[in-house]
Figure 1 (cartoon, rainbow over the protein chains, first blue to last red):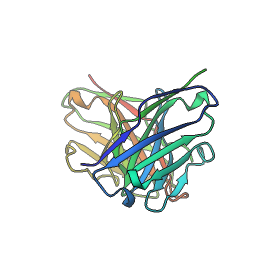
Figure 2: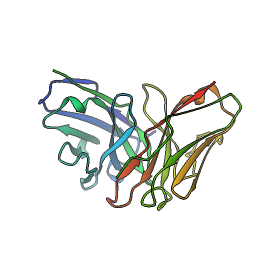
Figure 3: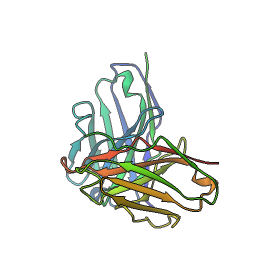
Figure 4: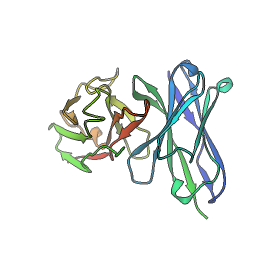
Length: 117
Length: 112
């Protein structure tokens, strides 16, 4: 069974850094792209970027380029989403999802990130 | 690229059919047969219910069907059931950046 298990909710202050994770099981981690998707409170989904764990090739949405960093650790089958300096507007639920045949066929449970002073 | 356009809400009675539209442009929805649909219950992660415009993943009910005409894709749910009440999101391959995906704003389906 394909599973994507994300790290728990975070509460941070503006300007702080953060790295959230997405651990994968049930398939070959290095063979499928993993995407990150943002959902702001009461809003729709937004594609942030995507990474191929096999060689760490990564692509970002223009809206998120330079704002976040996507990475992986092959040894633990884990994908990461990282911020160097959080803003209040980063408050959202963040999902990781496996990209398969240009659709997202498996999703993590989501990580709620709250940024507040 | 702009997000895809979906109605904010639709409703239907049990047993009826409802259709949710997803409008893009000739550069995304109209250009590629890579439209997917996701169902999301409040507080839960999205789940894939349609991919490649009209294909259903294994285990998804055949009450869900997808289609596309020009720049507009549609999700039809037939034989509405109470459990269908949820948010529905469409997504399309956007071309350009080879991996970019666009999403719609989501549609709240209410079963009356």
